[in-house]
Image 1: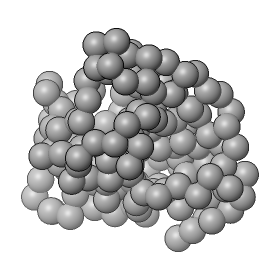
Image 2 (image 1 turned 180 degrees about the vertical axis):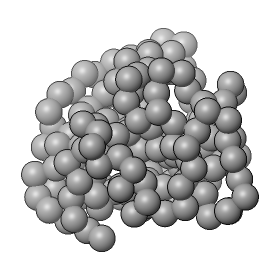
Image 3 (image 1 turned 90 degrees about the vertical axis):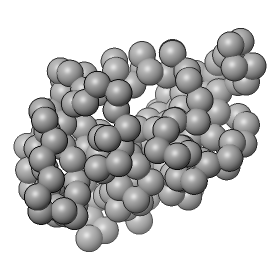
Length: 169
């Protein structure tokens, strides 16, 4: 299943040590990153695991096609389509121009080999987490845009970096 899918993109906010969450919650609150996430994903399909969906404060995200992957056959999520495998999701989104995988860690790992783009907010600080983004081999990717920022509220710097895959997995 390592065939690249040109419409699959991973979007995440990651710490320097690739931590993305702890106790089913985000590690940091970055209003500008949340606005960026909304701007990039609105009008598109988003794909997430059950735990990520359950961590959303208001359920399905508006103005997006919400897809949840779960192994459980009897789970339904209001405002979402439910699939039980990566292959089923790929079939369901094959006509979409761009599909955003939004977490969590295991879902990112399953879709990483298929992704042609990464939209990362990289916080330049380590955080303690229990959920991590997959290791990225940056030789396979080229930067298509980068913006370096400081967050005075949290007192750390971060970069919004968009990548395109240049080498197959």
